[in-house]
Length: 291
Image (tube, rainbow, N blue to C red):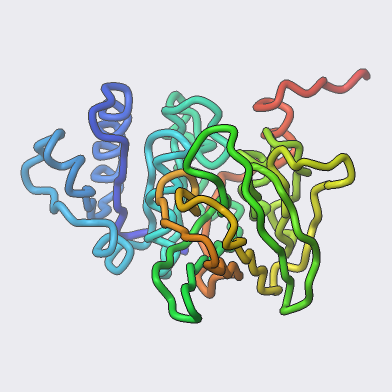
C-alpha cells in the first residue's frame, strides 16, 4: 500500500534514537511524505513545521508508523496503534529487538523496499484482560506479549484456579502464571521455560511460575478460548496482573481475572527477506548451518 502520511515514534531521552529519527525525517520528506511526530519526541527534536500528535492521533491520521527504540517502545506504541488501520515497523535502538527488526544502518535500504511494496505484512493478535470483583469489572487493559498473574512480593506463593471456557483445568500453588501470545513467546514466557510459537499460530501458552509440584508443565490452548484465573480468598492482598510489564492492575483475594483474544490486531510490516527463524538464530544465538 502507498504510504503518504508517516508517524514517527521513539524512545525519549535516547541520543541514538534521536539520531535515527532525524535521518528518518530527511528520508521521508525527500519522498514527499507528510511526517507526524509523536508529541514527546517533538519536544526533544524541536523540528519546526512538523506536527506533533499523540499516539491516538497518529493511529487515526497516518498510514505507517515507524517506532525507533527497543521492544519496550514497540509494545507501548502497539497497544494503542492496534486499534487503528495502520502499518507499523520498528527500527532497533534497543537490546534484543524481536519486534524492531530494521538495523539503524539499514534504514534507507529497508524502507526503500517497504515503500516499493516489497514487504511482508502480518497481523499479531493481542490479549484483553479484565479483573472482576463480585462479577463487576474493576479494571482492564490489553497486552501484546503477555498477561502475568503474580504476587506483589518477591518469591511469594499464591493459590488460584484455572478455567478454560468455564471448564475447570487445575488448581495451583505457585508464584503465578504467564499467559503469552505467539509474539510474547520469545519474551518473559521463554525465560520461564515456555515454548516458542510461530507468530501466525492462533494459540496462547499458559506457563506456571515456579509451581510447587513436579507435574506442572506449560500448556498451549486455543486463542479463541476464555481463560479465567480465580484467586483464592486465602491469599494475601498484594496480588497483581501485569500487561507487558508496563501496566499493573491490582488484584484482591477472591477476584477473577478473565483473559481472551482482543478484537484489535497489530499490523506489522517487515522488509522483503524477513525470516522469523533468522531472527531466532540471531537473537537466541542458535547454531548456523553445518553445510
